[in-house]
Length: 506
Image (tube, rainbow, N blue to C red; front, side):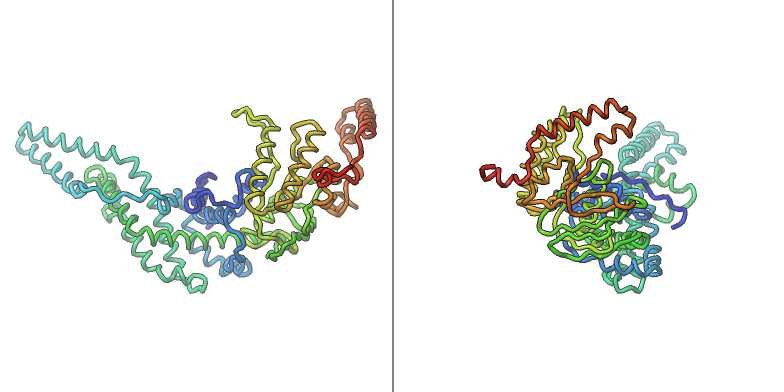
């Protein structure tokens, strides 16, 4: 809808639906979510989408595994008139400014009507009568009763004012949901048959949640609320109606949110430069794969059969970007059934990563301790179920020898339980893990990015010193130190972690 400003929900609100209905059941952990920039990706998907659609997209990213591509999303991506028709039916949902999944799906039931509620209808009448009687009689005790009753009205209004205001926002979103349900049910579309079945019931429920006609008259609402407690009485009664019809509202939420999520996916794919519906298989094949968050990104192709992959490349060549590209596409294939590639074959495995370990000043955790903690988490996840592990420069927080030793041991153990895609400047790891990981190298050939089997031959770490203005003296000294270290270090060719683990004489 042109000119509409979407309400800026925070990430914790978007995640509430998944947390409420799924609990801790998730195929992504927080670390992986942050590593793969899935918050930014979710924001890209959720453009022009209400909180309900955003929450459903988030839930699918977190828990959906192996489901076939959403048939409605696939059809709408290729049928713009049909997509626009459905999009217009749910457009008003974008006016929702309150998250309601906890209200509808939360473990705590909504309370029933208080027994004293009928008295609220008589309290304003008794108050008005006492004031009028006091005016005509002038009897002082009657004035005391009138003042006391008026004070009681104000006290009740003050007591429930915040709850009433919050409930009005919840009710506003709920009624927008029911209206979208009703409008979708009026569309003759085979994909909406389930919504049509109870669209009339949703419409009647929406009518029952309305305020009285007196409340919509100009200026009358404020008088009705403060003098007759209409807002407080409507708060209790509408809450009871929601409690009574919670089953219908939950079903309505699930179906409408699913439709809106499919619309969002179709709208996104219609503008995507390239995408394909992923095939399911044991291998990982991504041909001309791209990252959707990078404009003008160069496509690369990756094939990972039974073994994992060790990726090398010069500094700044884009190894980390490649890892994020592969990781994100594996997640979208599992959750939505598509990849940003010319062709894709992916296994139905969860994805876990280790790419952004940082110092935690608040807890006093050093960089290396954060890396160790993440390594333990990955090993625990590997023990639970097979998975794909995407790792960038593991164990950088200690000296070279210990870094290589720890990385070799942990990576080798991870390969026993799943697929490992790792990028590292420690080329010695390629030889140590040669029985588990195939070496691939990212390079730039004739101005084009290329990923091909092999290991980096020409490093550029020292050359970058000169390019960054460190001076010839520093660069020359660095080259001399590098030459000495290269001769000093034993070459590990032919030695693998497997041999060392089995105690072979190397």
